[in-house]
Image (cartoon, rainbow, N blue to C red; front, side, top):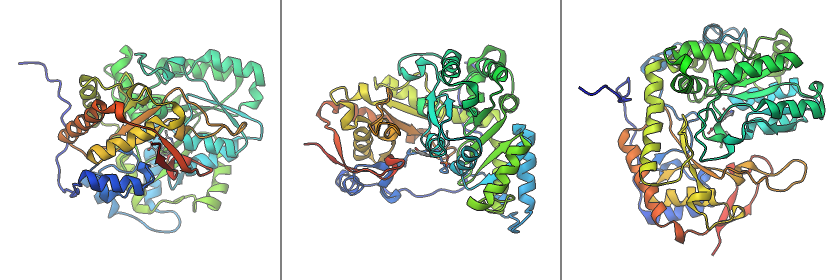
Length: 460
Ligand code: P61
Protein backbone atom coordinates (compact mmCIF):
# COMPACT_ATOMS: atom_id res chain seq x y z
CA UNK A 1 0.00 0.00 0.00
CA UNK A 2 1.33 3.49 -0.83
CA UNK A 3 1.69 5.83 2.14
CA UNK A 4 -1.45 7.99 2.33
CA UNK A 5 -0.80 11.51 1.05
CA UNK A 6 -4.36 12.68 0.37
CA UNK A 7 -5.63 15.87 1.93
CA UNK A 8 -9.29 14.73 1.76
CA UNK A 9 -11.61 16.90 3.80
CA UNK A 10 -12.44 16.03 7.44
CA UNK A 11 -16.13 16.90 6.84
CA UNK A 12 -19.04 16.06 4.56
CA UNK A 13 -21.62 18.28 2.87
CA UNK A 14 -24.98 18.79 4.59
CA UNK A 15 -26.52 21.59 2.51
CA UNK A 16 -25.80 22.98 -0.93
CA UNK A 17 -26.21 26.39 -2.56
CA UNK A 18 -27.05 26.38 -6.28
CA UNK A 19 -24.78 28.20 -8.69
CA UNK A 20 -25.85 29.80 -11.95
CA UNK A 21 -23.98 28.90 -15.11
CA UNK A 22 -23.67 31.76 -17.62
CA UNK A 23 -22.76 32.03 -21.31
CA UNK A 24 -19.65 33.81 -22.54
CA UNK A 25 -21.79 36.59 -24.08
CA UNK A 26 -23.50 37.16 -20.72
CA UNK A 27 -20.11 37.36 -19.02
CA UNK A 28 -18.73 39.82 -21.57
CA UNK A 29 -21.71 42.06 -20.86
CA UNK A 30 -21.44 41.62 -17.05
CA UNK A 31 -17.74 42.53 -16.85
CA UNK A 32 -18.26 45.55 -19.10
CA UNK A 33 -21.06 46.74 -16.80
CA UNK A 34 -18.71 46.17 -13.84
CA UNK A 35 -16.10 48.49 -15.38
CA UNK A 36 -13.71 45.52 -15.79
CA UNK A 37 -13.42 45.34 -12.00
CA UNK A 38 -14.25 41.93 -10.48
CA UNK A 39 -15.23 43.68 -7.19
CA UNK A 40 -18.13 45.28 -9.08
CA UNK A 41 -19.56 42.05 -10.52
CA UNK A 42 -22.85 40.82 -9.09
CA UNK A 43 -22.39 37.49 -7.37
CA UNK A 44 -25.33 36.03 -9.31
CA UNK A 45 -23.17 36.35 -12.44
CA UNK A 46 -20.24 34.43 -10.89
CA UNK A 47 -19.85 30.66 -11.17
CA UNK A 48 -16.83 29.86 -8.95
CA UNK A 49 -16.14 32.77 -6.62
CA UNK A 50 -12.45 32.89 -5.77
CA UNK A 51 -12.34 36.64 -5.16
CA UNK A 52 -11.50 36.19 -1.50
CA UNK A 53 -11.44 33.89 1.50
CA UNK A 54 -12.81 36.74 3.61
CA UNK A 55 -16.21 36.04 5.13
CA UNK A 56 -16.93 33.53 2.35
CA UNK A 57 -16.33 30.41 4.45
CA UNK A 58 -18.80 27.62 5.23
CA UNK A 59 -19.56 27.41 8.93
CA UNK A 60 -19.90 24.01 10.56
CA UNK A 61 -23.08 22.58 12.10
CA UNK A 62 -21.55 23.39 15.50
CA UNK A 63 -21.04 27.01 14.53
CA UNK A 64 -24.62 27.23 13.28
CA UNK A 65 -25.78 25.72 16.55
CA UNK A 66 -23.75 28.46 18.25
CA UNK A 67 -25.74 31.05 16.28
CA UNK A 68 -28.85 29.80 18.12
CA UNK A 69 -27.10 30.42 21.43
CA UNK A 70 -26.74 34.14 20.70
CA UNK A 71 -27.23 36.25 23.81
CA UNK A 72 -28.21 39.59 22.31
CA UNK A 73 -27.99 41.60 25.51
CA UNK A 74 -26.67 45.08 24.84
CA UNK A 75 -24.15 44.74 27.65
CA UNK A 76 -22.27 41.76 29.05
CA UNK A 77 -23.44 39.10 26.56
CA UNK A 78 -22.39 35.63 27.65
CA UNK A 79 -21.00 35.06 24.16
CA UNK A 80 -18.51 37.87 24.74
CA UNK A 81 -17.11 36.10 27.81
CA UNK A 82 -16.90 32.83 25.89
CA UNK A 83 -15.02 34.57 23.10
CA UNK A 84 -12.73 36.39 25.54
CA UNK A 85 -11.79 33.13 27.24
CA UNK A 86 -11.23 31.37 23.90
CA UNK A 87 -8.91 34.15 22.74
CA UNK A 88 -6.85 33.94 25.93
CA UNK A 89 -6.78 30.13 25.84
CA UNK A 90 -5.86 29.77 22.14
CA UNK A 91 -4.08 33.00 21.29
CA UNK A 92 -2.62 33.95 24.71
CA UNK A 93 -3.73 37.60 24.67
CA UNK A 94 -5.11 38.99 27.93
CA UNK A 95 -7.54 41.66 26.74
CA UNK A 96 -10.13 41.64 23.98
CA UNK A 97 -11.95 44.40 22.11
CA UNK A 98 -14.39 42.97 19.53
CA UNK A 99 -14.85 44.95 16.28
CA UNK A 100 -17.09 44.57 13.24
CA UNK A 101 -14.13 43.27 11.17
CA UNK A 102 -10.36 43.59 10.86
CA UNK A 103 -10.15 47.17 9.69
CA UNK A 104 -12.24 48.31 12.67
CA UNK A 105 -9.47 46.98 14.91
CA UNK A 106 -6.77 48.50 12.68
CA UNK A 107 -8.44 51.89 12.91
CA UNK A 108 -8.60 51.91 16.72
CA UNK A 109 -5.12 50.47 17.16
CA UNK A 110 -3.45 52.87 14.69
CA UNK A 111 -5.11 55.89 16.30
CA UNK A 112 -3.94 54.84 19.75
CA UNK A 113 -0.36 53.95 18.88
CA UNK A 114 0.72 56.34 16.12
CA UNK A 115 1.76 60.00 16.34
CA UNK A 116 2.10 62.26 13.27
CA UNK A 117 5.50 61.70 11.66
CA UNK A 118 6.02 58.16 13.03
CA UNK A 119 7.29 55.25 10.96
CA UNK A 120 5.71 51.80 10.97
CA UNK A 121 7.92 49.01 9.63
CA UNK A 122 6.22 45.82 8.51
CA UNK A 123 6.62 42.56 6.61
CA UNK A 124 5.01 44.01 3.48
CA UNK A 125 2.04 46.36 3.36
CA UNK A 126 -1.57 45.34 3.45
CA UNK A 127 -4.05 47.76 1.86
CA UNK A 128 -6.33 48.54 4.82
CA UNK A 129 -3.56 48.21 7.41
CA UNK A 130 -1.29 50.71 5.67
CA UNK A 131 -4.15 53.12 5.00
CA UNK A 132 -5.06 53.23 8.70
CA UNK A 133 -1.41 53.73 9.61
CA UNK A 134 -1.17 56.59 7.11
CA UNK A 135 -4.45 58.19 8.23
CA UNK A 136 -3.05 58.17 11.78
CA UNK A 137 0.05 60.07 10.51
CA UNK A 138 2.64 57.34 9.93
CA UNK A 139 4.78 56.35 6.98
CA UNK A 140 4.90 52.62 6.29
CA UNK A 141 8.33 51.07 5.66
CA UNK A 142 8.64 47.65 4.04
CA UNK A 143 11.16 45.48 5.92
CA UNK A 144 10.31 42.10 4.43
CA UNK A 145 13.19 40.06 2.95
CA UNK A 146 13.99 40.78 -0.73
CA UNK A 147 12.96 37.26 -1.76
CA UNK A 148 9.33 38.15 -0.99
CA UNK A 149 9.30 40.45 -4.01
CA UNK A 150 10.65 37.75 -6.31
CA UNK A 151 7.94 35.41 -7.62
CA UNK A 152 10.51 32.76 -8.58
CA UNK A 153 12.49 32.53 -5.34
CA UNK A 154 11.75 29.25 -3.56
CA UNK A 155 12.58 30.69 -0.11
CA UNK A 156 10.35 28.72 2.32
CA UNK A 157 9.67 31.75 4.53
CA UNK A 158 9.11 34.72 2.26
CA UNK A 159 7.22 36.41 5.11
CA UNK A 160 10.43 36.85 7.13
CA UNK A 161 11.58 40.22 8.36
CA UNK A 162 15.01 41.47 7.26
CA UNK A 163 16.51 42.72 10.52
CA UNK A 164 19.13 44.72 8.63
CA UNK A 165 16.35 46.77 7.06
CA UNK A 166 14.84 47.34 10.50
CA UNK A 167 18.23 48.36 11.93
CA UNK A 168 18.68 50.80 9.05
CA UNK A 169 15.34 52.43 9.81
CA UNK A 170 16.16 52.70 13.53
CA UNK A 171 19.53 54.27 12.69
CA UNK A 172 17.84 56.76 10.40
CA UNK A 173 14.80 57.87 12.44
CA UNK A 174 15.45 56.58 15.99
CA UNK A 175 13.50 53.93 17.91
CA UNK A 176 11.29 56.60 19.50
CA UNK A 177 9.69 57.32 16.11
CA UNK A 178 8.72 53.66 15.69
CA UNK A 179 5.58 52.94 17.76
CA UNK A 180 5.57 49.25 16.82
CA UNK A 181 6.60 46.68 14.22
CA UNK A 182 3.67 45.44 12.17
CA UNK A 183 4.08 41.69 11.68
CA UNK A 184 1.61 39.62 9.67
CA UNK A 185 1.07 35.85 9.70
CA UNK A 186 0.83 34.92 6.76
CA UNK A 187 1.75 37.74 4.36
CA UNK A 188 -1.24 38.26 2.09
CA UNK A 189 0.26 40.54 -0.57
CA UNK A 190 3.37 38.37 -0.89
CA UNK A 191 1.24 35.38 -1.89
CA UNK A 192 0.16 33.95 1.47
CA UNK A 193 3.75 33.39 2.53
CA UNK A 194 4.71 32.49 6.12
CA UNK A 195 7.15 33.96 8.61
CA UNK A 196 9.29 31.34 10.37
CA UNK A 197 9.31 30.87 14.12
CA UNK A 198 13.08 31.34 14.10
CA UNK A 199 12.74 34.72 12.41
CA UNK A 200 9.96 35.78 14.75
CA UNK A 201 12.08 34.88 17.77
CA UNK A 202 14.98 36.91 16.38
CA UNK A 203 12.63 39.82 15.76
CA UNK A 204 11.42 39.55 19.34
CA UNK A 205 14.96 39.66 20.75
CA UNK A 206 15.90 42.52 18.46
CA UNK A 207 12.89 44.71 19.22
CA UNK A 208 13.21 44.10 22.96
CA UNK A 209 16.59 45.85 22.90
CA UNK A 210 14.90 48.97 21.57
CA UNK A 211 11.69 48.60 23.53
CA UNK A 212 9.58 48.45 20.37
CA UNK A 213 6.42 46.33 20.67
CA UNK A 214 5.26 43.87 18.01
CA UNK A 215 1.73 44.21 16.64
CA UNK A 216 0.56 40.98 15.09
CA UNK A 217 -1.83 40.91 12.13
CA UNK A 218 -3.08 37.42 13.00
CA UNK A 219 -5.66 37.14 10.24
CA UNK A 220 -4.20 33.83 8.98
CA UNK A 221 -2.08 32.73 11.94
CA UNK A 222 -3.23 29.08 11.88
CA UNK A 223 -2.28 28.83 8.19
CA UNK A 224 1.14 30.25 9.03
CA UNK A 225 1.44 27.66 11.81
CA UNK A 226 0.69 24.87 9.34
CA UNK A 227 3.41 26.09 6.99
CA UNK A 228 5.88 26.31 9.91
CA UNK A 229 5.05 22.71 10.65
CA UNK A 230 5.68 21.75 7.01
CA UNK A 231 8.86 23.74 6.55
CA UNK A 232 10.60 24.19 9.93
CA UNK A 233 12.16 20.92 11.05
CA UNK A 234 11.83 21.58 14.78
CA UNK A 235 8.06 21.90 14.47
CA UNK A 236 7.26 18.93 12.24
CA UNK A 237 5.43 17.07 15.00
CA UNK A 238 4.04 20.00 16.97
CA UNK A 239 0.24 20.46 16.84
CA UNK A 240 -0.98 23.63 15.04
CA UNK A 241 -2.71 24.70 18.24
CA UNK A 242 0.61 24.90 20.09
CA UNK A 243 2.41 26.67 17.25
CA UNK A 244 -0.36 29.28 17.06
CA UNK A 245 -0.10 29.87 20.81
CA UNK A 246 3.66 30.24 20.62
CA UNK A 247 3.51 32.74 17.74
CA UNK A 248 1.01 34.89 19.59
CA UNK A 249 3.05 34.74 22.81
CA UNK A 250 5.96 36.36 20.99
CA UNK A 251 3.92 39.49 20.28
CA UNK A 252 2.30 42.28 22.31
CA UNK A 253 -0.82 43.29 20.42
CA UNK A 254 -2.94 41.77 17.68
CA UNK A 255 -5.53 42.75 15.11
CA UNK A 256 -7.68 40.05 13.59
CA UNK A 257 -10.03 39.84 10.66
CA UNK A 258 -12.06 36.89 11.94
CA UNK A 259 -13.55 36.45 8.45
CA UNK A 260 -10.54 34.33 7.46
CA UNK A 261 -8.81 31.79 9.76
CA UNK A 262 -11.70 31.42 12.26
CA UNK A 263 -14.23 30.54 9.53
CA UNK A 264 -16.98 33.08 10.18
CA UNK A 265 -18.79 35.43 7.82
CA UNK A 266 -18.23 38.63 9.78
CA UNK A 267 -16.23 39.84 12.78
CA UNK A 268 -12.84 40.86 14.07
CA UNK A 269 -11.03 42.05 17.15
CA UNK A 270 -8.17 43.88 18.74
CA UNK A 271 -6.33 41.90 21.42
CA UNK A 272 -3.51 43.07 23.64
CA UNK A 273 -1.48 42.31 26.72
CA UNK A 274 -1.05 45.99 27.53
CA UNK A 275 -3.57 47.28 30.05
CA UNK A 276 -3.08 50.89 29.05
CA UNK A 277 -3.71 50.19 25.35
CA UNK A 278 -6.74 48.15 26.37
CA UNK A 279 -8.17 51.06 28.35
CA UNK A 280 -7.68 53.48 25.48
CA UNK A 281 -9.24 50.98 23.07
CA UNK A 282 -12.26 50.58 25.35
CA UNK A 283 -12.66 54.33 25.17
CA UNK A 284 -12.49 54.41 21.40
CA UNK A 285 -14.53 51.33 20.58
CA UNK A 286 -17.68 52.95 21.93
CA UNK A 287 -17.26 55.83 19.48
CA UNK A 288 -16.66 53.83 16.31
CA UNK A 289 -17.92 50.25 16.79
CA UNK A 290 -20.21 49.68 19.79
CA UNK A 291 -20.05 48.83 23.49
CA UNK A 292 -16.83 47.07 24.51
CA UNK A 293 -18.64 43.75 25.04
CA UNK A 294 -19.85 43.51 21.43
CA UNK A 295 -17.93 46.13 19.39
CA UNK A 296 -19.99 45.74 16.22
CA UNK A 297 -20.71 42.03 16.45
CA UNK A 298 -23.99 40.36 17.33
CA UNK A 299 -23.86 37.94 20.27
CA UNK A 300 -24.52 35.02 17.92
CA UNK A 301 -21.57 36.02 15.73
CA UNK A 302 -19.25 36.09 18.75
CA UNK A 303 -20.41 32.57 19.63
CA UNK A 304 -19.81 31.25 16.09
CA UNK A 305 -16.38 32.90 16.19
CA UNK A 306 -15.42 31.31 19.51
CA UNK A 307 -16.30 27.89 18.05
CA UNK A 308 -14.57 28.70 14.75
CA UNK A 309 -11.29 29.55 16.50
CA UNK A 310 -11.17 26.06 17.98
CA UNK A 311 -11.97 24.46 14.61
CA UNK A 312 -9.36 26.58 12.82
CA UNK A 313 -6.46 25.15 14.82
CA UNK A 314 -7.36 21.53 14.05
CA UNK A 315 -4.53 19.76 12.20
CA UNK A 316 -6.99 17.83 10.01
CA UNK A 317 -8.83 20.98 9.00
CA UNK A 318 -5.61 22.74 8.07
CA UNK A 319 -4.20 19.77 6.15
CA UNK A 320 -7.27 19.86 3.87
CA UNK A 321 -7.40 23.65 3.71
CA UNK A 322 -3.82 24.14 2.58
CA UNK A 323 -3.88 20.84 0.68
CA UNK A 324 -6.59 22.20 -1.61
CA UNK A 325 -4.57 25.35 -2.32
CA UNK A 326 -1.49 23.28 -3.09
CA UNK A 327 -3.56 21.03 -5.37
CA UNK A 328 -4.79 23.99 -7.42
CA UNK A 329 -1.31 25.50 -7.55
CA UNK A 330 0.27 22.26 -8.71
CA UNK A 331 -2.38 21.91 -11.46
CA UNK A 332 -1.50 25.37 -12.73
CA UNK A 333 2.23 24.62 -12.62
CA UNK A 334 1.55 21.45 -14.63
CA UNK A 335 -0.13 23.62 -17.29
CA UNK A 336 2.99 25.82 -17.35
CA UNK A 337 1.14 28.84 -15.94
CA UNK A 338 3.46 31.28 -14.06
CA UNK A 339 2.54 31.46 -10.37
CA UNK A 340 4.27 32.51 -7.15
CA UNK A 341 6.32 29.73 -5.61
CA UNK A 342 6.32 28.25 -3.06
CA UNK A 343 2.52 27.91 -3.19
CA UNK A 344 1.03 29.76 -0.20
CA UNK A 345 -1.87 28.93 2.06
CA UNK A 346 -5.00 30.93 1.22
CA UNK A 347 -4.64 31.17 -2.51
CA UNK A 348 -2.60 30.75 -5.64
CA UNK A 349 -1.15 33.93 -7.11
CA UNK A 350 -0.64 34.32 -10.87
CA UNK A 351 2.40 36.31 -11.95
CA UNK A 352 0.73 38.73 -14.37
CA UNK A 353 4.03 40.24 -15.53
CA UNK A 354 5.09 36.83 -16.79
CA UNK A 355 1.61 35.84 -17.97
CA UNK A 356 1.21 39.02 -20.06
CA UNK A 357 4.80 40.18 -20.68
CA UNK A 358 3.70 42.38 -23.59
CA UNK A 359 1.70 44.69 -21.26
CA UNK A 360 3.36 47.59 -19.39
CA UNK A 361 2.45 47.85 -15.71
CA UNK A 362 0.59 51.14 -16.33
CA UNK A 363 -2.04 49.36 -18.42
CA UNK A 364 -2.83 47.12 -15.44
CA UNK A 365 -1.90 43.57 -16.50
CA UNK A 366 -3.32 41.89 -13.37
CA UNK A 367 -6.60 43.83 -13.57
CA UNK A 368 -6.85 42.83 -17.23
CA UNK A 369 -6.08 39.20 -16.49
CA UNK A 370 -8.72 38.94 -13.73
CA UNK A 371 -11.31 40.28 -16.19
CA UNK A 372 -10.22 37.79 -18.87
CA UNK A 373 -10.43 34.83 -16.48
CA UNK A 374 -13.97 35.85 -15.60
CA UNK A 375 -14.93 36.10 -19.27
CA UNK A 376 -13.41 32.68 -19.96
CA UNK A 377 -15.31 30.69 -17.37
CA UNK A 378 -17.16 32.76 -14.75
CA UNK A 379 -14.35 32.26 -12.21
CA UNK A 380 -13.89 35.43 -10.15
CA UNK A 381 -10.39 36.36 -8.95
CA UNK A 382 -8.78 39.56 -7.62
CA UNK A 383 -6.14 42.03 -8.84
CA UNK A 384 -3.19 42.41 -6.45
CA UNK A 385 -0.82 44.69 -8.30
CA UNK A 386 -0.49 48.34 -9.22
CA UNK A 387 -4.21 49.08 -8.81
CA UNK A 388 -4.23 47.61 -5.28
CA UNK A 389 -0.98 49.40 -4.38
CA UNK A 390 -2.55 52.84 -4.97
CA UNK A 391 -0.66 56.12 -4.93
CA UNK A 392 2.13 57.37 -2.67
CA UNK A 393 0.91 59.63 0.13
CA UNK A 394 3.99 61.81 -0.42
CA UNK A 395 4.25 62.14 -4.22
CA UNK A 396 0.74 61.30 -5.45
CA UNK A 397 2.30 58.97 -8.06
CA UNK A 398 1.25 55.33 -8.57
CA UNK A 399 3.26 52.92 -6.46
CA UNK A 400 4.84 50.47 -8.92
CA UNK A 401 4.98 47.24 -6.87
CA UNK A 402 7.36 44.53 -8.08
CA UNK A 403 4.56 42.03 -7.65
CA UNK A 404 1.81 42.31 -10.24
CA UNK A 405 -0.49 39.46 -9.29
CA UNK A 406 -3.90 37.92 -9.70
CA UNK A 407 -5.03 36.17 -6.54
CA UNK A 408 -7.10 33.01 -6.84
CA UNK A 409 -8.37 32.74 -3.29
CA UNK A 410 -9.97 29.70 -1.74
CA UNK A 411 -12.85 30.10 0.70
CA UNK A 412 -12.67 27.52 3.51
CA UNK A 413 -14.80 24.36 3.18
CA UNK A 414 -16.76 25.71 0.19
CA UNK A 415 -15.53 24.32 -3.15
CA UNK A 416 -14.63 20.82 -4.32
CA UNK A 417 -11.66 19.35 -6.12
CA UNK A 418 -13.67 19.48 -9.39
CA UNK A 419 -14.12 23.22 -8.94
CA UNK A 420 -10.34 23.45 -8.68
CA UNK A 421 -9.94 21.44 -11.88
CA UNK A 422 -12.33 23.71 -13.79
CA UNK A 423 -10.50 26.75 -12.44
CA UNK A 424 -7.08 25.48 -13.49
CA UNK A 425 -8.32 24.46 -16.95
CA UNK A 426 -9.96 27.81 -17.61
CA UNK A 427 -6.85 29.74 -16.56
CA UNK A 428 -4.78 27.49 -18.82
CA UNK A 429 -7.17 28.37 -21.68
CA UNK A 430 -6.58 32.10 -21.06
CA UNK A 431 -2.84 31.40 -20.99
CA UNK A 432 -3.09 29.86 -24.46
CA UNK A 433 -4.64 33.02 -25.93
CA UNK A 434 -2.53 35.41 -23.84
CA UNK A 435 -0.85 37.15 -26.80
CA UNK A 436 -4.13 38.64 -28.01
CA UNK A 437 -4.95 40.25 -24.65
CA UNK A 438 -4.80 44.07 -24.41
CA UNK A 439 -4.69 46.34 -21.34
CA UNK A 440 -7.08 48.71 -19.57
CA UNK A 441 -7.26 52.38 -18.64
CA UNK A 442 -9.02 54.09 -15.70
CA UNK A 443 -12.39 55.75 -16.28
CA UNK A 444 -12.93 56.34 -12.54
CA UNK A 445 -10.37 56.31 -9.72
CA UNK A 446 -11.55 56.65 -6.08
CA UNK A 447 -9.27 58.36 -3.53
CA UNK A 448 -9.07 55.57 -0.94
CA UNK A 449 -8.58 51.82 -1.54
CA UNK A 450 -9.21 52.52 -5.20
CA UNK A 451 -9.19 48.87 -6.30
CA UNK A 452 -12.59 48.22 -4.66
CA UNK A 453 -14.60 50.67 -6.78
CA UNK A 454 -12.39 51.76 -9.69
CA UNK A 455 -13.75 51.47 -13.23
CA UNK A 456 -11.84 50.79 -16.44
CA UNK A 457 -12.24 50.49 -20.18
CA UNK A 458 -10.26 48.39 -22.65
CA UNK A 459 -7.44 49.98 -24.65
CA UNK A 460 -8.09 49.22 -28.31
C1 P61 B 1 -8.85 39.70 1.65
F1 P61 B 1 -8.91 43.39 -1.62
N1 P61 B 1 -8.40 40.78 3.70
O1 P61 B 1 -7.72 39.16 1.74
P1 P61 B 1 -11.25 43.13 7.08
N2 P61 B 1 -5.28 42.11 7.35
C2 P61 B 1 -5.18 41.14 6.43
C3 P61 B 1 -6.24 40.90 5.57
O2 P61 B 1 -6.13 39.93 4.67
C4 P61 B 1 -7.43 41.69 5.68
C5 P61 B 1 -7.48 42.69 6.69
C6 P61 B 1 -6.40 42.87 7.49
C7 P61 B 1 -9.25 40.63 2.70
C8 P61 B 1 -10.48 41.49 2.49
C9 P61 B 1 -10.02 42.66 1.70
O3 P61 B 1 -7.52 45.24 -0.32
C10 P61 B 1 -8.46 44.50 0.33
O4 P61 B 1 -11.97 42.17 7.97
C11 P61 B 1 -3.93 40.34 6.34
O5 P61 B 1 -11.46 42.88 5.62
O6 P61 B 1 -11.53 44.54 7.45
C12 P61 B 1 -8.50 41.53 4.78
O7 P61 B 1 -9.71 42.85 7.40
C13 P61 B 1 -8.68 43.57 6.84
C14 P61 B 1 -9.86 42.54 0.34
C15 P61 B 1 -9.45 43.74 2.35
C16 P61 B 1 -9.10 43.47 -0.33
C17 P61 B 1 -8.71 44.69 1.66
O8 P61 B 1 -9.64 39.44 0.73
